[in-house]
Amino acid sequence: MKLVIAGGGGFRVPQIVEVLAAAREGKGTHPGLVVDEVCLYDISTSRLGVMAAVLRDLDFPRAPRVTTTTDLREAVRGADFVFSAIRVGGTCGRVLDERIALEQGVLGQETVGAGGYAYAFRTIPVAMELARTVRDLAPEAWVINFTNPAGIITQAMRTVLGNRVVGICDTPIGLVRRATAALGLGAGAVSGVDEGASAVSFDYVGLNHLGWLRSLEVGGEDRLPGLLGDDALLDHIEEARVIGPDWVRALGMLPNEYLFYYYLNRESVTRIREEEETRGQFLDRQQGEFYRAAAEHEYLAGKLWTQTHDEREATYMAEARDESERDGRREEDIAGGGYQQVALDLMTAVSTGAPARMILDVANSDTPWAGATGPGATGSGATGSGAEAHPSGLLVPQLREDAVVEVPCVVDAQGVHPLRVGALSGPELGLVTSVKGCEELVIDAAFHGDKVLAWRALASHPLVDSIRVAQRVLDGYIAENPDIARVFGD
Image (cartoon, rainbow, N blue to C red):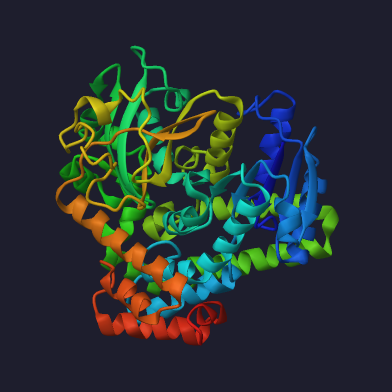
């Protein structure tokens, strides 16, 4: 079996190879997953060289054969799975995304709002080239999209690949795992599909980086209200700590951590502007230092990677945490496994046929799993989760058929099957429909090189409070980032 990592010079590669090496020994978290070749594709020969050096130095026993190439067609030919982890413009692009928005007083963040849309504008053309190449040379391959903003990029790639491309994120399932851990349930209880007395099922719905956990049933009893009512238990949930236990109780559900930027937008913008450097500047500096040092001292590449990885994990979303918690994250906050864990879970379920329950980015019109009997099908939860399947057949009937939504799914050898989710209503429905409408404008703007649509997308986003500010932000992106200027013919 051949796995291609598009963006193979990227920082997460060793985490993937480590798991695959253990799997080939029948050990670790994915003992049934046997990959013979990992092909690293990247446009940067220097970054590919560094990752190859890191893997040599870490020397994982029984690791699959690792090849590298800068030729996309060579990489994709014969692939069974493709991980899309591209970063068009690198960390320098992220710095511009953040700074230009912040200069106008609006959020600069790589997946949310103006910064996320800038990232999407320059990434969509490259993602579409990857999609067309897979369609032409490996039409049976599954594409697992890590590339942010994941919902937008997945929806764009689906126009070529249909349901052979699936978007992933580790934050929703990480939230579920933290909630089950806080309740004293085993981590393994989340992924199984057994509906026995001890089974855990959950209702989660939204968009990528914009969703809510609305029920968490164990043996038919919703345990989420008890969790929300207990301050000691909520202290184990990072999302509750950063957003506030009072607000999650007011909601009656647990929000995805990225809703911090919506619920505390003024505070987040103020914090980021007061920091010595943005997250993008931190990563640009940190990773620049790592790649330079590892290229110069290949015999230390593995050690340097490990040190850099630990610092990166400890400082993730630091602006969302009080200064007293910024020196490092709690172990329980980072125990979800990351993007690579979700991608490998999906890959294992498809390749081995052993069904797994996950939260994934899929089309609104995808056919629900025939065996769905969780909270989304049976009717429980004070927030409206549990409505019967809508007559339209859509997971969220207020959205278009091709809209990519983030919902629980069962994955098996036949593919990805979403579970029915309860109805969205009230402010949550309004936020989802508003943001999805903006995302669709972003895709159309990138497809057609249309600056007016791009302006509308930015100006209509809930976190941008002025059409004039939106115009200045867009003008700034086009003027300062050649990757975005090319999309719009400038």
